[in-house]
Length: 186
Image (cartoon, rainbow, N blue to C red; front, top):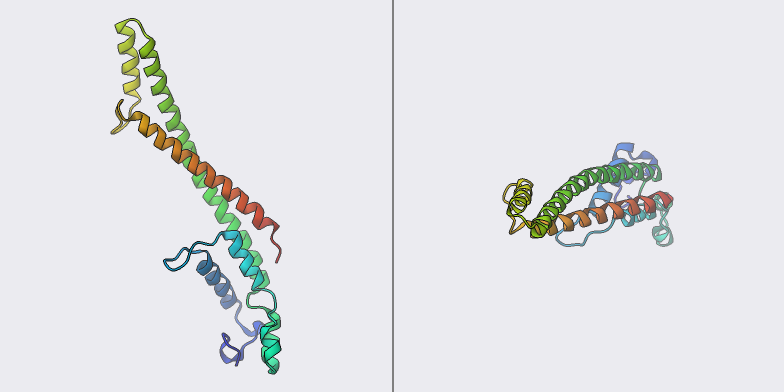
C-alpha cells in the first residue's frame, strides 16, 4: 500500500472531489499564519503547490513495487485543480483590492475634511478682525466629528494619513502578487 493513499489508490482512482479538497487543504495549511509557523505569501504558496504537481523520484529509486513507482510519477496534486485554484486566488485578491479600495476612498474623504479644518484654522490665524476669526473657528468646529477636538485633530489627521498609506501599500502589494501569480506555470 502507498503511504497517503488508502487501499493503494492511484491518482486516477482517487475521487476528483477528494483531489480538490487535498489542494484546498494544502493551500490553506501553507498560507495560514499559525502560532508555530510564520506566514508564507500567496505566490510562494502557489509555487509549492505547483512543485507538488510534479512527479517525485524519491520513492521510485528506493522502491521496487510497481504501484509505488506509478504513483510517484503522478505527483501529489492534480495540475488542473491547481490551475483552477489560481483563478480562485486571483478573484479573491481582486475582491480584497476592491474592499480595501473602498476603505481607501473613505480615508481620502476624511483626509480632505481634515485639510479643510487646517485651512480654516490657518485663515483664522491670519484674520485681523475678530468677526472673521470667529467665522473661521466656527467653520473648523463644524467639520469636527465624534470625539474630535481642535486640540486632537492633528493627531487624528496623522492616524488617517498612516491608515491611508498602509492600505495603499497593501493594494500595491496585492497587484504585485497578481502579476506574479499570472506568470506562474503549472
